[in-house]
Length: 290
Image (cartoon, rainbow, N blue to C red; front, side, top):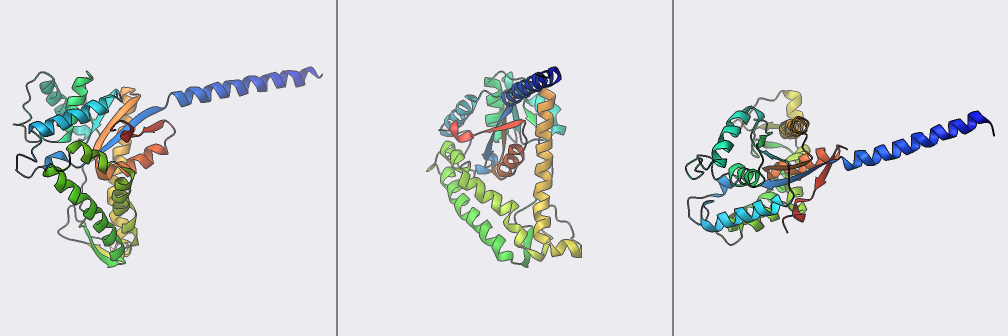
């Protein structure tokens, strides 16, 4: 046998073995991330005792939710606050850990950030709760006219006809907060929200935004031609920046198991973005919320 051929074969075998073992290492190092969508809990109150997040029944359900999510053992908890608010969040969390923050008296205390995020971080003895939001909101009513508007309207109606009765049942205690949260994280509900925001609006052309809508901006003639696509771009812009913040929080902390809690409408698009990132592995929240 030609010695040069033998040596080249050995080198190829070594390189193949190295690549194989490196691929396994890379796979094992994937960052696990679990996303749970919420209907904002502070908005799930209607002034009645039954709907209050501070009544004993709701507190038990919040404890159950926290306990189930804790089984994932996240080493970073990410909430719907901005990175610019991090110093404020840190100071609040320190007060909470030292039993010096009365959530009943705190303006935002009924919200999921504090009822679950702070509670979970404290139970897991974590030092921080991280904000990754980007302050840019809009409204489902911002897009209000255009060719084929009925396609968008029909999908939005499907979402509302499904979500509103569930919310009403939860506020009246016919449906537990725990089961309600599970329900809105099921694939069918996530798909309904996703299509209503990121898919069906694209049908709408030659339309305009409602001047009374949240964060209204005037569209030029070309933007009006693609009014539905412009509407989608507002939501996508916010979520791609949230995604960027998630990536950079992970780089900063070196976290390997991340729990993200956001409004339910964010979950579908964030899952899509994270699934396309080979460094991440999506963990099914429903596997824990059994």
